[in-house]
Image 1 (tube, rainbow, N blue to C red):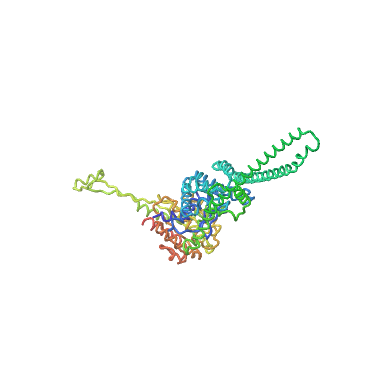
Image 2 (cartoon, rainbow, N blue to C red):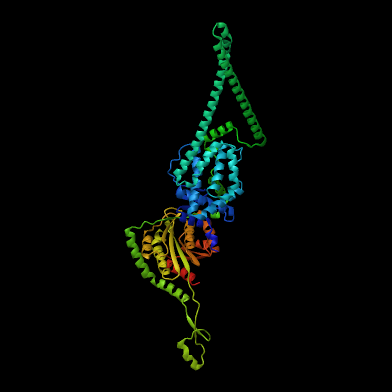
Amino acid sequence: MVSTLQRALPIVGAALGRKLGVQVEVSGRNAFTDGERIVLPAFDPERPEQELKSWGFLSHEAAHIRYTDFELDQSGSAFRRRLTNLLEDIRIERALSREYPGTAFTLSEVVRQLVAEGRLSAPAKSDPPVKVLHDSLLAMLRYEVLGQKALKEEASKAKQAMAACFPVKLLKSLDAVLDDVPHMGNTRKAQQLADEIIRLFQNQQQEDSDNSNDTGNDDKTDSLSSENSDNQEPDLKSAPSQGTDEKPDSTLATEHETENTQGQEKQEEKTDSTQSTDAKSADTQGKRDASGENTTEAPEDFQEESIRTVLESDNSDWPEDLFQSLASEMEGWSLRQEGGLSAVTTTPSVDRVEVLNADKIEGQSLLWRTKAESSRLAAQLTGLVQAKTMSRDRTGKRGKKLDGKLLHRMAIGDSRLFCKRSETITIDATVHLCLDISSSMSSRMELAREAVLALAYGLNQINGVTVSVSAYPGKSDCGVFEIMKPKDRLQDVAAVLSALNAHDSTPMATGLWHSVHQVLQARAKRRLIIMITDGAPDFDHHQTVMDLVKRCESSAIEVVGLGINIHSVEQLFPQSVVVSQLHELKAGLFKLARFWLIA
């Protein structure tokens, strides 16, 4: 089944990358994005959970490349950076799912898997304040904004944890700010929302500090009032002996007595209130000690300490980013893999060939030579295919249509008068030629150009056959040069071939992966890849080529090796042809195509 390779990470990664406008590479042992490309290590295709998480990581990082402004200044506290990143993750995933709805399902399934594993959940009420804030926002926003239903219960628990850690007034203000999360239009807006949240925490801290100072001043005022009352009492008692008027003294005494009584009552009320608050705090603390969690709203001093801890946090206080933890897990899979597809499964970059005017002139000459020298071979190939697919009429004794030209047979008793049309054989095929242009091909490049162009010229004349051509390595070992796509003009193809020069080593796995991409994109019933090389693949590509050829076989993709004076192709490919002389190359290519097309 073709689906075997169509579901391969490099194939799907490349397809998704093209669709999302990003470059995807599957190679090495690390998972990361640099703002321009996404690099993934290989995973075990027999493990569905690895496949799911890989797609989720790929979708999330593609959203970053597509929507995140990497040039935005990210300076400031760890609180600011981590909060901005958390809000930005929500924004980009929402934007991606609206443009590509399929990614919303993938990301939701990844979240469901992480919840099932216990790696994504609401925080405990006893967790550090920074973890409570981070994990709560993560669960609440992913459920409420992204609609990831696996987090419904966790989002509810997260609200309880927040209420047990931070003041009610702060949480109400925070809810109002979070209402703007679905409306964030860019990365700067996410950063501005993060700054608003930080100001809420700072304002709450300032308010708590002011309230604390006011309480201290009230205590000091009450103390001074009490001292003044004690000092004034002797004067009031001795006033009558000074020979002054008693009535005013009596009135003043009464006023002072009233004030002292009121002050004493206020002091007693404050004492009772303080004792009540202390009792409540002791009761709350007792419950916390007994259960390990807040069962009621946390004391004010605990809330103040939580706010201070969050504002003064550094990067080590914050939990690991959700998708960074996925990247670490994927790297662990890669380290446990043994050889095979984990060694080199690079999704090749497609490099452009710079074609100069001189190359166009040389290309025109190359095309004229190719047509003149290859016309006989091309005509033979076309003739064989036409003979195989041509519809023929035959006669029979029964049928629905009489052949008027055969009515004379009735005179001699021949009843074969009916015309019947034989079943038509059609061709629905795609062929990809992959040319090795490593340094060892320097002396062979001229003939290789002619041979490839000749076969492309011959196949293009056959209805139902599409042709594409590439060459490896490209500008680097992980790239290829795209020479011809279906429907390209042959004169343009000739110019590109003329501009190619041999260089570097033989990263054959890279060339083969690109070839597989090309034939899988074609809607054809039959697929053929012809690998043209004059050397063995690089050491770290050898096993990958063999593994990939096997996967091609199971996916109904035929891979044929054409070796130029090199017999290693016989070990790499189940079907191979070796030519010992350069002049045999062109005939060898036509022979391969002919047998495959009429098989």
